[in-house]
View 1 (cartoon, rainbow, N blue to C red):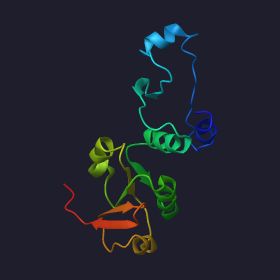
View 2 (cartoon, rainbow, N blue to C red):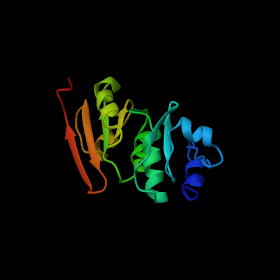
View 3 (tube, helix red, strand yellow):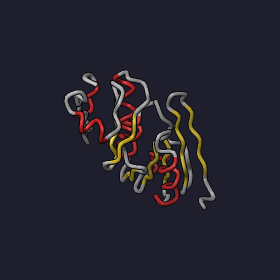
View 4 (cartoon, rainbow, N blue to C red):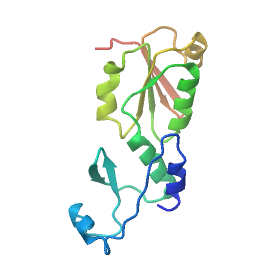
Length: 158
């Protein structure tokens, strides 16, 4: 936690890590049913969820960045698309809907948020179409950076 905290605090949208001594703050520990140490709780809109994943700083940072991200990110330029893909890293697959309404993939973003990054590109150039290897819109491009794989799906988008 000590190694991950400064990295998360310096993000464009900071993520806060707080440590609590449950032996001193017993009322708080009881409130959240903390009975074993160390316990890591994640709060999303005030609702706690116990984190049971790896405790290494780099993995925790990746997981918390994904946990705090929106279900579907709307991208409005080539640079926004490139930044999104770069910031997503290689740990999760990336899905980008080019020329798609966000509602088309929103249900997938909600359902599979913990497993992949979802975005919709609203404004992009033909150069970006060449970069991501698709020739018509709407298109859904899936990237798996870990394996350097790319696939394109042209629809139907029902």
